Amino acid sequence: MTDDMTGDEWTAEPVFRVRLEAESPSALRAFLDEVQPDVGCRPVASRSASGFVMDVYLPESRLESARSSRAAPRVSMTVLENATEVGRERQADVGEGNRFAARSEVPRGLGRKE
Image (tube, rainbow, N blue to C red; front, side, top):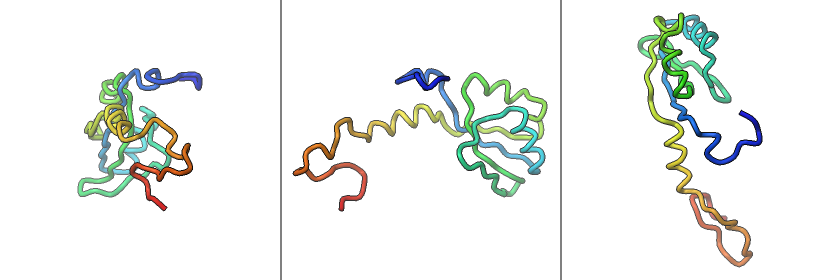
């Protein structure tokens, strides 16, 4: 993707939030090294009852290749949500105008009013 993409070009392909679960950090790391999913700004693997868990993001076209990767047998993958759709739903809460344009109006929306 390039910086000149706009609108739906960024989200032409659905991106899914996927939970990875592995018995050891090394199994999780091997999977991440091979598949190279988007791990977000601050990747964190948390301890769970069955080992270590981490949420990552994968485009729809890479889900099957991730499931068939060499490191996949040591990692459980669970698709949690279609992050693209969730993002579109949340954008409905965002206004389109400049709420600060008229100095006499009180800002509206979900933020804190001061």
